[in-house]
Image 1 (cartoon, rainbow, N blue to C red):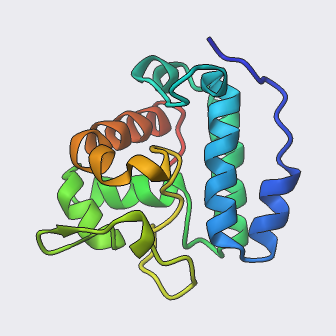
Image 2: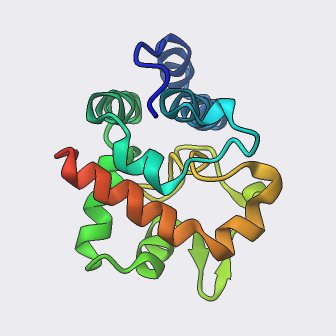
Length: 158
């Protein structure tokens, strides 16, 4: 069930405009949880059903803000483009955007929130709470990203 159909993007816009990438990443998560109504659930996680029903207009707004303020370096459509370039291979995507280095997945504390990262590195925290990072990364990240990128494609966010 979609909850917040009138989200306020002011905070995200201001964080992105000031290149506060980490705070913008966390605000993206907050917005997505609120839009989906997941912030009202005990686990505060986006479910498969949430992703399938996530409003295209809201996903597009978040993406456009990221693209605009990162000069085309970050955003869901950027990640989706790379995902398609690597034939929807999540491991190759992760390697290319800097979420994985060889056989080693990066932890939340290793995410670089600067301009000196690969294109497509952010946003990333929308998927999981930081306290469960390694567990969720290992178990559910690829499925979560596939759902989001499928939704992005269905919403023509490419």
